[in-house]
Amino acid sequence: MCLGAIYWARPDAVYFAADKHDAADGGFDDSFIYSEIELPYQKRSIHTEHHPSDSASNVFNLWKQSENKIDY
Image 1 (cartoon, rainbow, N blue to C red):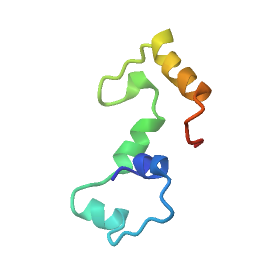
Image 2: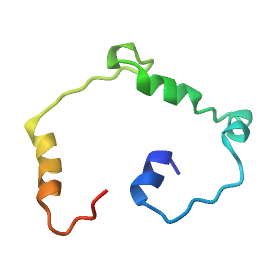
Image 3: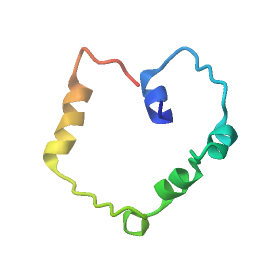
Image 4: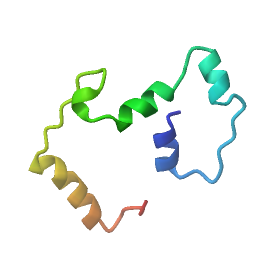
């Protein structure tokens, strides 16, 4: 499970056996992902464009106004 999804899910605890070094040794090295996130969109290895729009922001505004939400 991706780390972002784990934190968004807000579990009481996380249990794991293999660490990031084990994953990297098995061919799943996440250090590349962390370095990419820090780069401006134009410098990422995968073409990335941000297209801001009011409709995208509205989804979050509706969430903020919802009385049935769980605060994160």
